[in-house]
Length: 332
Ligand code: ATP
Ligand code: FE2
Image (cartoon, rainbow, N blue to C red; front, side, top):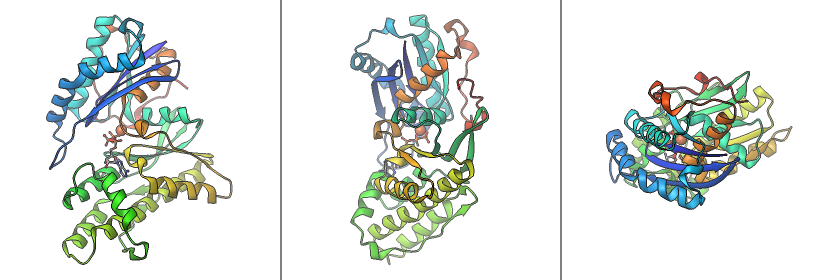
């Protein structure tokens, strides 16, 4: 049993191959910009131009021939329409060529499911990527969103501030490095926006921009204070979801979860809880967008009979606004 997965929701075009729950290959190429944000049609063009190369590299790395692929999974949503379209078109093209079924996969849920490779069984997931920030856990046939951002995703928040400070895109890794160099005594108070299990970042962004403009604070101190403040918000909401659900595992997902300080703060919270919680952190290659997670969930769904014949491909469409809790989890 081998499944090929295609990821194309935003800036990353990735193809992964999974066989019997093991990742055989995970190849990706990321569309980046020097200045300004992601232009969806340009990112889609990037995906179109790179798809064949990534496909052949994924097959080569997996040491597998295309005829040994049993199904093609793709990211159906949520995401940017032109980018999703490229992924779906390629999935349909491959399925038709290989005469194999297609499995449509929800991107956010695949972030969670692939985390199970690390051993998590029934976790609360803190999913923090560019576009998304959600606290998710499974309850009666659905992955429920216990809390989420009320405005922008935490990664976009960091990226926008970084762009404003002219330190390039993606901003997360640079902010992390600057924060590490800051003097911990110089913490600057920032707005702290938690409502129940929801968070908000746009007010903090405005505040940070003003502080940077004022030239009274160093970028290092602002980066440090940004991390301490918004990660505390994320850890607080994750902890509340753990207390609410009674679950004993916390799983991290999404590109921002690559951040070492966020990982450390989550670890401290998990250890300090009276009833210990186990923390699971997948490898960076699985935290950021990738094709392997799509293949991984694709295989699970395929084995439960959730698939479309290549002959019915025209019944399948992308779902740019699909929400995590729209998906009926029929594979558990
Ligand atoms: P999604 O479609 O799930 O919202 P995405 O397309 O935004 O995901 P990801 O690859 O999951 O992309 O995450 C990218 C984000 O991760 C960027 O905003 C980037 O700045 C951030 N990031 C990457 N490394 C770090 C880090 N070390 N610290 C903080 N943020 C990071
Ligand atoms: Fe993602």
